[in-house]
Length: 337
Image (tube, rainbow, N blue to C red):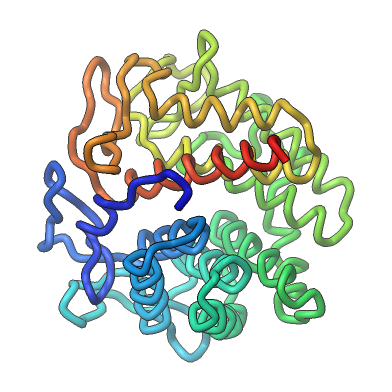
């Protein structure tokens, strides 16, 4: 095992999928499940080192949930009531992109041949769809890059990268404050991460350079007094007060993922330090000097408020902590080798 505790993730997991919300540590069954979180969970369990039988079973559960969510044209349902009913129509919104990312990680990282094959099958169908949304295509592109690690000649995966290229931002589209959009919203770092990964896969030097530059800008914009001070749930525009709250773990996890991708691409210690700062944010090196992760449960609190914490430990926040911890341990192993 990689040292992470998966107790709370297991508490939120059923034979069907993964409950999205919690009241404290207790699953809020009435709020159901979503592809967004199950995709994140599949990424985390497939990246676990030496998974236990229980963790391997959770991977199979998450994969089956995502496969059931798929429409024949590659689009996906997102909302599920936990009893078997989908509550929305299939679409290619962000959850589709996250699912394709998860399928790619399953195909490339799962030690379970059944899960790896299921990931490839799910990805093949998801690759039929496209999205007009930059974040959805960014996540999808990260999944396609993972697939190319398994099958470098995968035409469908490579074609998606080419289709994602004009949707992803570039420095030429940056506004006067350095970001391609007028406002920072959520999971911002997935955009430069995808630019770096796609740029490398397509040997597009300009896109890769722009991705690294935007990630550096995002790091500086979300650093205050030597620690991370991330965008709150309401977003941030130029001139907004810092620090601001409610800060969410998903922002830190997105930075951690991007930092790991940037380090793998460049070997630059700057990105290793950014990943270390992401882990430190969960440990209490943040605007509230409050630990976000809960060592007693393996979960993480849903938000950093002004002087307090949102004590609920939902799936997104717990997975954000687990993912960040995994990436930090992985990088430490690489550095030690």
